[in-house]
Amino acid sequence: MITPEPSSTIGETWIRCVEAWGPRPFLAAPANPARAYHPQGLEWSYAEVGAAVAALQARYAAAGYGLGHRVALLMENRPEHLLHKLAMNALGVCCVPLNADHRPREMAYVIDHARVDLVIAVGPLVPLLHEALAAATHSPLVAPAEGDAPLPRPLRAAESGTPGPDTPASVLYTSGTTGRPKGCVLSHGYELEAGRWYATAGGLASFTDGEDRLYNPLPLFHVNASIFSFYAVMLRGNCQVQTDRFSPTRWWAEVHASRATVVHYLGVVVPMLLVQPPSPLDRGHRVRFAIGAGVDPQRHAEFEQRFGFPLIEIWGMTEMVRAVFDNEAPRQVGTRVFGRPRPGLEVRVVDDQGRDVPDGTPGEMLVRHSAATPRAGFHSGYLDDPVATEQAWRGGWFHTGDIVTRAPADGLLRFVDRRKNIIRRSGENIAAAEVEAVLQEHPWVEQAAVLAVPDEVREEEVLACVVLAAAGRADPAAAVEALFEHCRQELAYYKAPGWLWITDQIPTTSTQKIQKHQIFEPGSDPRRVPGMIDLRARKKRDAATRS
Image (cartoon, rainbow, N blue to C red; front, side):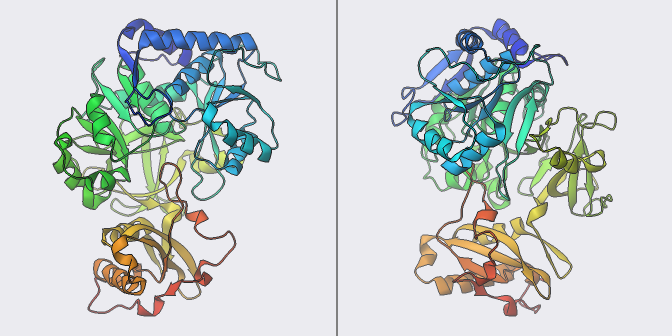
């Protein structure tokens, strides 16, 4: 393994990796005849990528790009994205990935907020980029990703000096599930430490130098694929298999053909794979473990038994991807447990007043590196938003916004919900995720989102938005009755939906995170939306409920 020095930069570390791992495979893409790029697939060695990165670095340098510049990449999940990033970072240029699934207005916001100097775009996405630029106030230069023509010279000069560990390597934008996305500034030191941390997690998540192939279906504008797994692979001389996007029908064929030994997932992946028909590929693979988060507790053991490898749940966030892993046996399958911290990450669990809560009691998870260096290994801050940065770091601890419990016996941490998804009803804290999980168990539910709405008597009430599966659409009234009774039987009476709304679609991000703030029009009262059903009078404590 290549261990970065505290003073290392990405460019320096990359050169060491090329020298150490030259002929070994580094980047691969599975074949997909329907894909516009590399339809036959590809596999590049460290030496081949090293030569390509050096050529790109020379192009950027010849045009005058260097320290302090920001370049946006609109390149889908093409492996070339990672080559451009390595080349830019070696010069001190900061990479700003753009989400190809964004609508023009969303993309314009990122371009304006990051004030990028240049956008590199692949041909099929140029029309989308021009629509975004028409809606933007900032006007960056634009260059095609294809070809090797000289790049346009930047409109401002590079800063003097050379990159260091604190130099920004990326600005990644949060998913914006509750409001405007924030730009997380990630330094060279952050990105290399994220890779080192994952590469040395150990236990059930152990890597072997030069032997592992990590299949990652997640987008390259996301911290998981472009930083967390990418640098872990690079430091150990392993290979990242980067597919274009998750496809349940292609998943096992690609995993098998790519000889993957590790796979990454999101919670949404699990049920989609479980409903696929049985196949010899279910066990005809080399996968030793999977890394991800958000698996439905009811499907966790079922998945592992069918496909034969552990789903290792982790916790991490763009602001701090020094993840917590449930990678030590015996694991707590089907419980939302995501492990315990190891040296280099300290955790507190606190109430609304910032006081530590007893083990077993839900509270917000606060994290830091240590008392002496609380922010070591964390993001450098939110771009141009020092107020939000300091608010997140109040009291010397980073406030994650995640509600967890800590087990008294072994210190294992269990995810409960996002703090903003906790519904406060008549003094009771209700986790939206718990109600969503119960709704998702019903065969008539395709998708569910639960949120809080104001209540004149009980402070807040539970509102459930449901997309019905085909079996429930024939009689929506009967479906409403069945879903309410299902919740009454499975939950304490006060957790059942007080309001229920049947809808055709619930908006999600490109990584399938539900965007609850987009379900209803800003400023509107969801309780007054046509079709909203008031079930509050039926929420009563009686012998038929588990109260």
